[in-house]
Length: 284
Image (cartoon, rainbow, N blue to C red; front, side, top):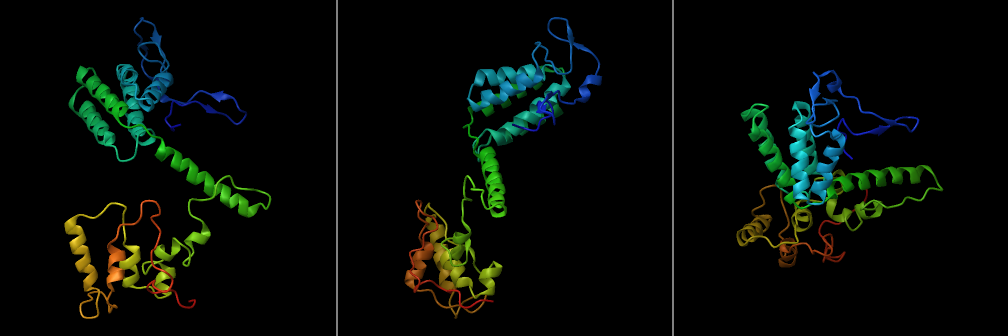
């Protein structure tokens, strides 16, 4: 649920509270039926919070018609309602659509056009709102960003509680364990490179970063990218190193550095303990 100001909330005693809104002081308006229109109502006689929720739920379900209807009903009901709609439309692109979609850019552009190009009573403003609603409804729906926020936050709170209370069992472990993040752990052995205090303080250099830390995947690099990357790696040689003296990389090390990380296990390292560069030696 968003933090928009017309969402209902529960008070300290569990009672349902009306949201505060300064629109109560606005000049009286009438709805489509000629009746007095309270601040929380739309021109069609609907509650604003219901129509706003309808818009968001319609986007989640890719219901283009209802999303467009809800958008129009909000923006035709007055400047405050219109402003609320645009705030909600922007939030919806974060809460309810897959990360990486371009709906946000379209919504912001339509909002800019609506509010900066046309006056309040001009119909193109409504067209912008409808177009933005259709963009949102046609984008791929996903709550991944919102759920990630809840899952990661709650998991860390649960983890801390388990450490304080001996009898508390956390529901989920963090995505990466303390053991895996340890400098000698599966993930930590890659993450703790020369750019970190544990790695730099215990001897890891550019060769470790080149061979392990800077790998990426699972997609293959472009032909040009792979060619240039290999040449950069070949410059990591005592005769050519431009950062600091290095040890020349072997063909095995070069091949590992250039190979995309496995899709099924991106942290997997094909090198055995005897082959890994710059093993930690001693404690600082």
